[in-house]
Amino acid sequence: MKYLHLILAGLFRRKTRTILTLVSIVTAFLLFGLLDAIRVSFEQVGQSANGAARLQTSSKLSFIQTLPVSLFERIQAVPGAKQVTYANWFGGAYQDPHNQIVSFAVAPNYLDLYPEIQVSKEERACFDGTHNGVLVGSALATRFKWKVGDRLPLQSTIFPDRAGSKNWPFQICGLLHATDKKTGGFFDAMVMLHWKFFDDTTPYNQGQIGWYVTRVADVNQADGVARAIDALSANSDHETRTQSEQAAMASWIKQLADIGLIVGSIMGAVFFTLVLLAGNTMMQAVRERTSELAVLKTLGFSDGSVLGLILSESLLLLLIGGVAGLGLASVLTPIVSAGSGGVLNLPPVEAGSWIKGVALMLAIGTLVGALPAWRAMRLNIVDALAGR
Image (cartoon, rainbow, N blue to C red; front, side, top):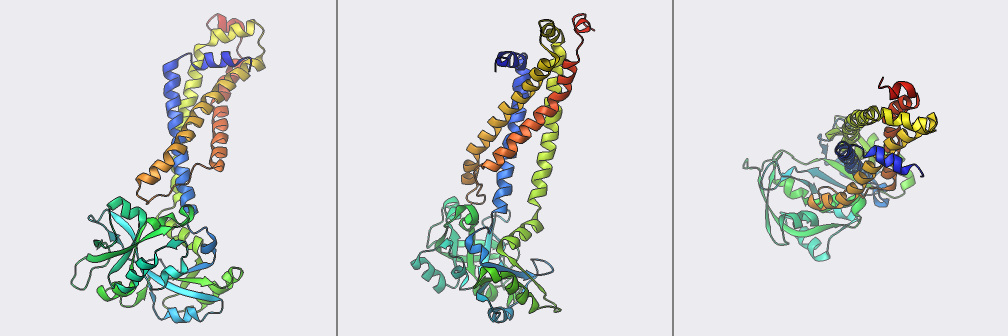
């Protein structure tokens, strides 16, 4: 620590350049914190005690392919299957086709398999007794100022009604509240309608099911139950794939977009650019101080001491900017979640992200400081003072 004043003096010798470099580092690690939170939020979908007891059965070919309703009773008869329900993707949008909302047409017992979704008894009774009734997520209701009892016109981006219109009239019967925001917060941002109303209203479904959900009696027997369910339709024109809820959610998301690949590609480009920028800053800083470094050696600083000073300067630059960026990400994640109206439920920047972030700071700091530090260490005093 006795050389800290020398390290800081060297680091802020050109204040404007250092501040601009720090802004770039802060931005890079702010993006790292936010994107890592997005990646973690997608990974956490379905990771709950309730989710571990549920299996999802969908078409083996693609999740957009439907299954016959006749599978319902056959799945119920599988040993180890405690309860079965089903749903279809509706493809709803509110006011504008680009303003899409997660919306499912669900069986009457769908909520019975999801105890992590809270609906009051009165609102559940209204939903069960209203043919065109819907339950809406509490975050969506807040975002669009919906109230129980309101008429809700939704567009379906996929299914028209029998008259050819894609405008569907609904009545809001109640609100959905997720008890665990970490693993099931997306329930706060979705709409549930009756599968029967959906099937009766569109001519394009005709008794087809999007996917089945099975609660198993024993979690330890889930793999065997999944194999037995898939065996029901083996070698048919509607072969199925049954997975744990977490695996099914991950498969759905991956068919839409590979979040891990996207996040990794973006951060790879960002950090590659950061290495070039920070490396250029350190090279210029050392080149401008050649004579000063020669004076330090003349005063008795060893080659190793000079090497350590330059490396410490590089590491401190990355640590100041990186910690500030991750700290800013910690502040912004709850703000982004609240501003998304429940569409995004970002977890806080966790200890694992901080560990990875600090490791990246140290690695990048060492990488960009190594060459200028090596050159400073090998500096010849006579040549440096002579300006050669």
